[in-house]
Length: 192
Image 1: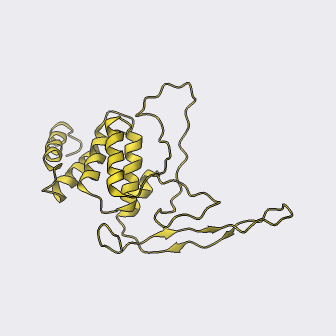
Image 2: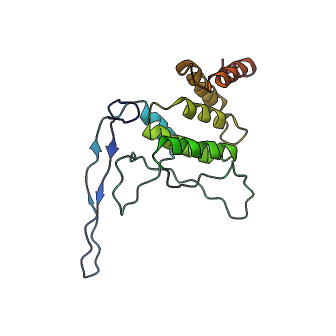
């Protein structure tokens, strides 16, 4: 069971077992274990799979059961002399905590520093671990997608603001989310 929502949790885990190398120096191929399928709510799969920000498991270690085995797309690495801002730089893969408070704190810090790629990476991890989300997670997604960066997506920002407004009426983020929904509907005609 998911400790956060109480719903049944379903995981897909791929485990690679590596045999010890013989003393002669010849390498053996790792024995592949077929993927174990465990049920997961359908709402979690699109959030994690659409962004591709899940770290790819190393072939020398077994993948932890808390992380889905979705391979990450390799981000192009800019040349060291390029002048990309912090918001335009490709996301740097980092070890992220699994505690919801820590993930939200990291997302707030990255948003304050205008590191939108980092915000999206942290929130994708949050949604992977807690597929039903939270008011603050959806609010931070909306704020991140609304920033004037290459990641800007007003439709996604609008959808997240609407979700906060509709599902969490007692949230401290409700008022600003409702105001942003009204603003976007008024000024972005193609979204209505």
